[in-house]
Image (cartoon, rainbow, N blue to C red):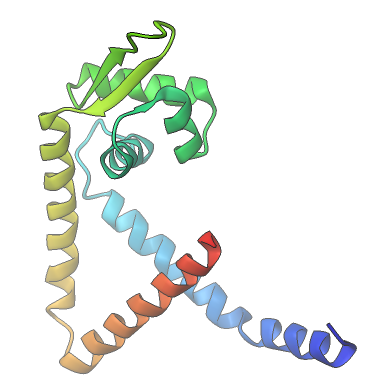
Length: 154
């Protein structure tokens, strides 16, 4: 990258700092409000673990820890709580008894569905107060934010 390109890239990055700051704040506030809609006793990390199991299917504790980007003791504690609540099942691997496979129970699936529905209803109620132009702008913004996230995953 040439000096002129580096200068332009640096200028572009500096120019978007106010937007980046505003988005960070509003997304964090929205995420906090949505978390507040969750059922008591289930932490955001436990919900995330349930969603990962749903998305990727049965997996080992170490695979789940990797998906969640946490240490094995952290995921072991979360899975223990989820198992005690009847939301996941732990089955010992028949070939290697040291390994346990974690899967969602039907209660776990229903719990995730109910949690998502409650959060979606909360957000839909607020979106319904906006005019059509604002909703269209947010629809476009959601697509753009999704692209930003996809680019990060590549």
